Amino acid sequence: MVLFQCHAPHHSMAILSPFNSKPLCASLPNPSFTAHHHPYPLTTTTHLNNNKPLSLSTVPRKLLCKPPQGKYIRDDYLVKKLSAEEIQELVKGERKVPLIIDFYATWCGPCILMAQELEMLAVEYENKAVFVKVDTDDEYEFSRDMQVRGLPTVFFISPDPNKDAIRTEGLIPIQMMRDIIDKDM
Image 1 (tube, rainbow, N blue to C red):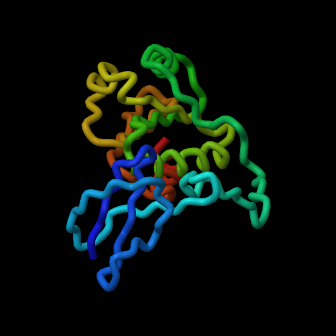
Image 2 (cartoon, rainbow, N blue to C red):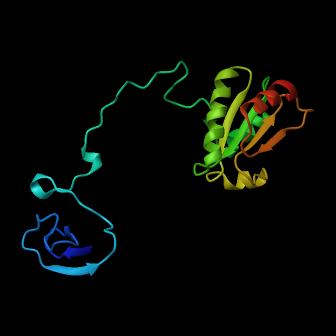
Image 3 (cartoon, rainbow, N blue to C red):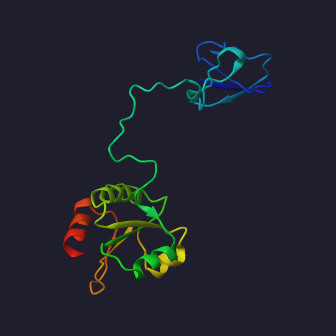
């Protein structure tokens, strides 16, 4: 197969069949061809009327059904993103419920999965725990001071000052987080 590139004003391509010398798509005005031998054409462009390329984004989409509206779907997230200063004030302050701090990054795949689990837990433990998150890219020094080396890292801090905080690193099952909150806090 011979691939020809046109140096015409709108830069279209024509592909010649190996069996005849006529282009398969001959909608090129006044072409001046330069032959390039290539075993496979890398791109193809389909033209509609007015010589505009057809793109999948120009085809209107139809929704087959309306997405379901769940009981707990809201416009904003329940687990709020806080700054380092806000987290430190929250840790120092008086609390009657456990504090769960999620250290995450927006580019981290496991962090996204963990965020979904934490949102479910925030609904489940509505007034029995406080869930917050810290973006490690925005709060680099704070994350370093907290010795966050792997993502996601979650701290479970008990309201009892005599209990040590529990730290997990990496994606953990939602049931394990429930067990930590219910039994160890």
